[in-house]
Amino acid sequence: MSEEKINANKQKVDYWKILFKNEWSYVTGAVVIVVLATALVIVTGKSWGVTGILHLWGGKFLELIGVNADTWSIYNGALGKFNFWNSIPSITNVGIVLGALLSALLAASFKIKKIKSYKQVIAAILGGILMGVGARMAMGCNIGALFSGLSAFSLHGWVFFLFIFIGAMVGSSMLKKWFM
Amino acid sequence: MAEKTLDCLGEACPVPLVKAQKELEKMQKGDVLIVNIDHSCAMKNIPDWAREAGHNVEIDEVGEGEWDIVIEKC
Image (cartoon, rainbow over all chains, first blue to last red):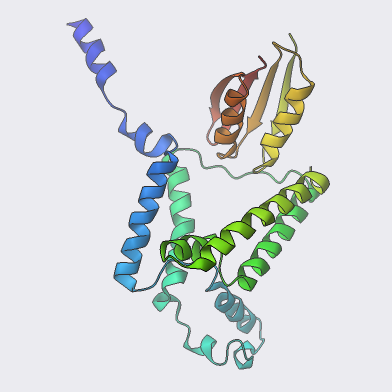
């Protein structure tokens, strides 16, 4: 009787551990991303992107602090027409942040991390600026330009793929040299 | 057998990995390096590298979102 119970306990599959606690394999992650990204194209008619919409967010922020950016040639009235709730990339971006929070909470690994040094702050700000400027100049990030580009059989995705490696190499050597 | 703890709390990839690699290089066979991390990527890339290099690796979850990676140099 007791032995049966032990065996039954041993065979019980811990679904929480499999689904939420343990890291998914690269293959599982890739399949889930492909399914969701395909669903996004089917439902909205547009491919997944992250950074493309950020220039409108930036313009909206400028308007908020009193700068009339809508007259600038890059916007040319686009800010007036911008509606957050009708903007699919805005909604998916918020979804990324909320999803990351949810996955950390479900894995019971949510933690507010301390800032270790002023160097770390400078590295983070500098890294953010470089990535932001780079993504705007390349007209996309590793989602909009790489992932969506490759899945649409576009050559620009492969060009981006090559240069993201060069950028990552330069970035890591900067990190090693100055910020460690 | 020396034992050393490396505090990488609050540090993001690839900093914990690079620090662990540098530290382990200085250590002798049989020494133990404990790396404190709170960045979940480091929970994958540090053990991946250390196992590949042939060391013994164990991961302890010490708190919510906090882990100790114990590496025994082989």
